[in-house]
Length: 590
Image 1: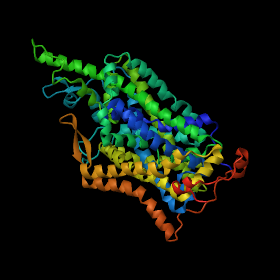
Image 2: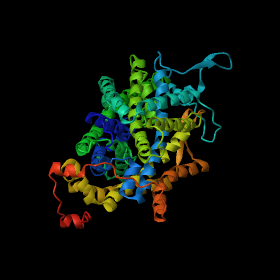
Image 3: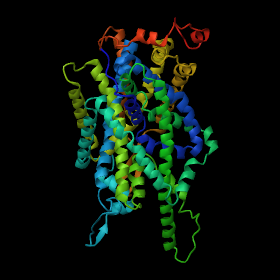
Image 4: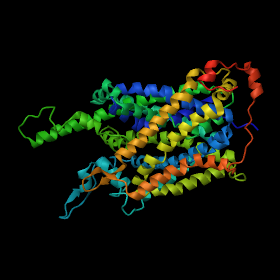
């Protein structure tokens, strides 16, 4: 029986673009570029894109389109000893969907709060003080209105992760809305997501263009762009810069989640996935750069306003004195470098800048709609990878796919309620730091090893020739066999080394000071971090050992329908003659 396919190539491409272009492009890449030498960072980023990102993206699409299964079924077909690789990917996808949808719930909360003027984070709330006067809330005055609205009004953040949690109904309602939205969009698999991506994959670009033209009209935008792009060439000698580039590439494209394999499994067998790979990865690369330009136009404006306010404040404190622009208390570069990344950039820094725009509520609505659609696209791919594996393996053979989807979304909603408490932001940080990073590196390494040394580069080359009508170049094969395992291995070892040498800490909100402080994770959180990693990674050796002992956890499946002879005749393919180079260097087997 032939597998269902996308209605057209545009749906597949938009699904890939929507999956690859996510929140990390908005709040991670601009920060890394500025941190790691400005324009000079683009050199290691482009190089890592060429030898790490594009090859693994290409490989996962090839595996999915050829074997026509989700990650678990595909790796089980490559070798029954490798089924744990697919299970690990699926579990990480579930973990990621839990906290990724939490971000969407925050966006929904902020989106609904944006339909008012003035915006609720534009000024500090007031209350009656001890002497009966109507004064601003002290915690807000110690921080800033956007920070107070984020940490207190929205998240109601506890002082530490060990505080007694209080339920946050606002975030809980946002989570229900977010999971309901995801369920409705993926209800019938690619038949519904294929339609939704026409909007969700294109709308963020429309908003980015609007923000770009607004940004270049703002005072100080040129200073922001200068800080972003003026290259610091000496930073290229810093190994940490190359490590950041390699790590960002790996996570930016959503590699090793199994989602690319699942999405490609619905592609027609004659689909040109090499062309799709190049289009999507290059599109993601330039989207990251364009997003960085937009972000730093806004940050340049915000820093300029803060710098002027700082000078004015100093003048008021030094009546009659003349302050120079280089006053040590007012440093433009320090202000813009404190913009940060992640949730702080989106929900504090950007909202503070939007406060100063004319028609601020309109800009806030556009911004949070953009974040919501970016998150939706990534959720489609992430959850589709896991659900496709469940459906392919027929864990619930008598239950309709729609019901399976509903059960998965309901289960994830219930589990994600741990984020809807006052300690939820710290649980979120724990998931963000540990549930995916190390497991995905191990999966990426295993994928390259599995194809290069178990499935065989000759076999995958033959498969690609059947689908594309031409064999892959030696560049791809060398990347898969040598460069990719080395690159991923170095990232993995560096990540482990950093954890061991620097320890693990988290940012806690100190309401007395109105700032974030670094605190060490308590022992039970460290145990939970280990559990998050082990519950996914342990399946890789576990399934292999079980197979060695004669246990068959997954039933043997018939290979999916694939018209081998028809494609061979169509492309006029003749048996490939193996060269000495292919035997010695690439390990081709007859």
